[in-house]
Length: 380
Image (cartoon, rainbow, N blue to C red; front, side, top):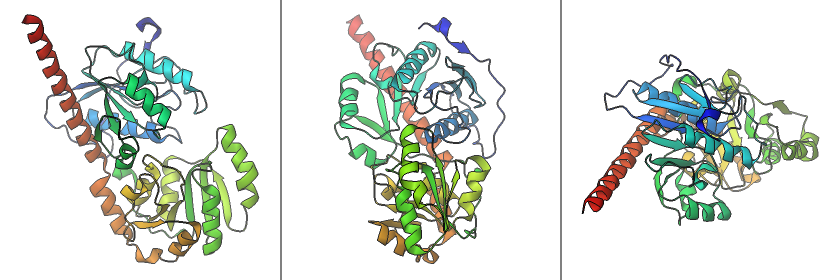
């Protein structure tokens, strides 16, 4: 696939979004960013990775940098965009589409200072990565043993970025250059009173996410539970039909998939977000979205949850369903204004952008030193 197969959008005028960062006055960078082909940027409803890519691209632009986003054709992020797939493929599209997306992107982004890859397979394709453009790659997924083994063999001098310290600890054999937590535009998340009279589950309809455990927590604590969950894939539908649907009723309600203002409204009015995960989740964007709204988080101490939730301060880290049900009765101990302030201090978009720019400059400086060293070696 050559560049002639890539159909670039014309550059669109970029207005400063609400909460945009002020230009820093630093020398600007031209950054090529690669998004997976599964979901548009920003996502219409579901898509944590795509939400972060959108915020990062807009935040960097607001700082005075140029971003070229290789994405899908129905993306609307207000920056220069290039694509091969005219529409998003969905989360069950398969790994081949991700490979083709990454290959096309690396060929198309020959006019940037640095490439930031957010795909799963891009770091595994040394044959298409440019020799003269440094690459950073954010690891958005759980680091399985097989994937880590392939990264060690194929990633080469890519600068790997973890999204939590727990994710980094899960693969100590990888040379991770930085840990950068996700950040959100806090102007999009008003603080609520938690006066809706319900607990909230928000995420994927999947056993690892623990919808059935959230229902058990609600039943044991005598609370109403709203379930807002993405349900696209066969495994998700089967789990819903076999496990979750028979548990609905009597205050337990599945309301479908939500996004945008509807999602924010649900978060602001919820007494708490119930996040009973049983897997090593690399981050958990919904938890910081809840905290931004002042909503406490009830989670099991899995994955990055211990880096996001401060036990007894912004929620409770529990060990089992019974303990989480007991924690529901302690929600009055949590100050919603503290939930918000902790999120402002630790998970703002501003902080995320600053960390990325610092990383980009370190990568470019290292590449310049390496290039100079090669020239001196050749001259000698």
